[in-house]
Length: 177
Image (tube, one colour):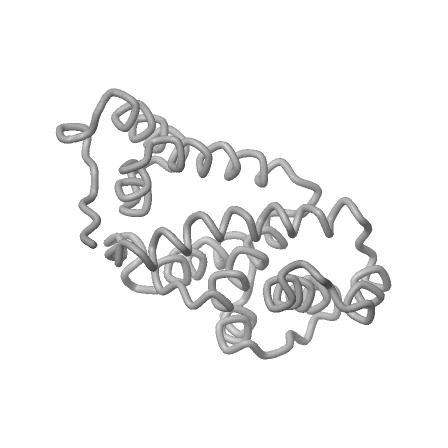
């Protein structure tokens, strides 16, 4: 099956609207959204969930950690490149980013609890291990942040799966990552 990206010239009215919205949200139209716009409702959902997640109880750094971790676990090259750049901008160190990509624990106990929760939720399909939840609680997180991680994972399912199916090429902006 071949997935062809949509542009403002080739897309239907709904696709063009969501591509224009993408440009407003991201300052560009990422290749991911060009493929998501094949089904404009998927692209629209992705944009809305992105904005909702950005307003979650997690800090920008924590959000990027969740998104990078989910992309690493789900082996999404496109999102690993994007969230390497965005993670750096949000305050993740190069060493933290490398460890997340390699599936290794972080030195920061609070961030490690969040990384571990993200990995565990994906690996167990949401059946979190009690020890992981205890570690998350001891790190200072509560139910609100745990559910924000679920929201972030949901966001990455939409993008990671789309990228796997479509073979989305990495945008020039993310190439150095």
